[in-house]
Length: 184
Image 1 (cartoon, rainbow, N blue to C red):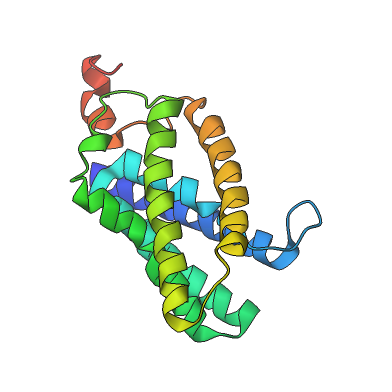
Image 2 (cartoon, rainbow, N blue to C red; image 1 turned 90 degrees about the horizontal axis):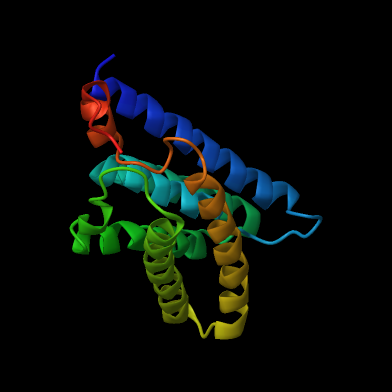
């Protein structure tokens, strides 16, 4: 199997996982509490770690999922669109960083992944809050509380991810060097 084909399958699997988790939490709640959590944010960062610029694919896919999900649940398609646009903030910040932060040859540590997650999620949060304020004054505390819960859950997911064998690694580098015995 070629790296390109493997990459597409890998991204598709993580995209489906991200979509299923966000849809399930949105429809059924978490721990009997119904509020919106974007568990997919950590999975999106993971795909950026694994495939760098190809993380745009899952980011765009999840933007569409979130817009549809927010539109159906809230019935407000404008707010849903603004939320979707804010999710792309993660792509923007990683593009501005020119993926330099992803140039780890080998396994990412928790702190490396958590730092990327923090930067990407912070930009997403600030864009969402700013865009909502363009429509109407939004209570910063309410938006912040929801995002803090989402962020903590995402950090927990990052901790689980980095402790798995060959998950939080640059897959292109890994696949090109695994047979040569040069991977770390």
